[in-house]
Amino acid sequence: MALLALSLAAGAAPAAGNELGVAVIVGNRTYADDRVPEVAYAHNDAEAFKRFVTGRLGYDADNVIDLRDATKSQLETAFGVKGNAEGLLWRYQPRR
Image (cartoon, rainbow, N blue to C red):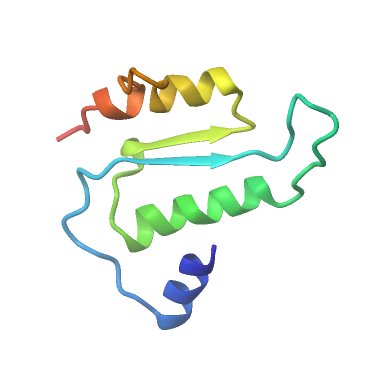
């Protein structure tokens, strides 16, 4: 989030040419293990970073994989697993 704050404070102009970039944004507010406290602003932070990626970095919104309260299974689906990095991210073909 420091990167986001610095970029917004600097007034960085939207970048051109990133429309084929792909991003995965994870915002976990709650966890299955009730010993882990809720992260109150996780969804807000994820949404702000999504706006940063699409608005300032110029990524196409269709190329942003947005995970909220992701489970281990959902993370493995997105990123792959040890010994097999063939997750969704690596097979993702951005729209042209």
